[in-house]
Amino acid sequence: MKVLITGASSGIGKDLTKLLINKYDELVLVARNDERLKLLKEELNKIPNKRIIVIALDLSKFENCKKLFEEHKDIDLLINNAGFGDCGYFEKTDLDKDISMINTNIIAVHTLTKFYLAEMLKNNKGHILNVASIAGFMPGPLMATYYASKSYVVKLSESIREELKHKKTNVKISILCPGPVKTNFEKTANVEFQISKASSYDVANYAIKHLNRFYIVPGFKNKLARIGAKILPNFIIAKSVYKVQKKRIH
Ligand SMILES: NC(=O)c1ccc[n+]([C@@H]2O[C@H](COP(=O)([O-])OP(=O)(O)OC[C@H]3O[C@@H](n4cnc5c(N)ncnc54)[C@H](OP(=O)(O)O)[C@@H]3O)[C@@H](O)[C@H]2O)c1
Image (cartoon, rainbow, N blue to C red):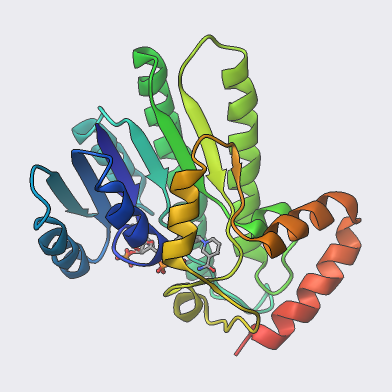
């Protein structure tokens, strides 16, 4: 059994990797930072009878996503986890960073999901886990691009899930929607979460235990937030997200 994890060099992706090594014989680990990937490989190599392949690749580039798929088509579980955020007033955030975020959080997830879904359907087996966020269920003032990118992941996956229901297939799709998690995310996004943060280990562990679900929402508060996002009008949610986010930005 072979798993492909993007964004495996740190945070949630790294913990998913460490937990999934018990279930999979082959692990393909992708991120940009070659050094961190090699250190992880060294650590994982201590476990016998496993094949660890690390690939330093910038997934914000379409040709890299294509190359990755062409070199590793036979994947049983694809985890589209690589992603990052940014914060600030929309007109002030850096456009290059916005575009890179859209390319990583949306285009790479879209591309890899499309390639692997077709392959999995051909073989009538496989599972795609897209890492979205609780942010994907609501508008996100002061983190507009990030929230919108995760909303794309949620809507894309919900639509694919319905399409799969109408096919006789064993292929599955799920979305992982965490709230704040203690990782490098805050540093990259220039935010500081004021509320309590889950550990990336707990989030990864929860995800693996609940992989049979479509919506994987770790934590009681996040489950409540998802219900709130369903019930309350968007303008009220936007108002409260603004208040929370305003306290977080540097
Ligand atoms: N932390 C949170 O509060 C939180 C909450 C909800 C959802 N999430 C989502 O969880 C996922 C993992 O984030 P994290 O919290 O674990 O943050 P993290 O520690 O910063 O990990 C992000 C991972 O994505 C990789 N990555 C980023 N851009 C990439 C690119 N262009 N090409 C390839 N790899 C790339 C990073 O590796 P390199 O830098 O080596 O490329 C790193 O391995 C993200 O999709 C994030 O949006 C996080």
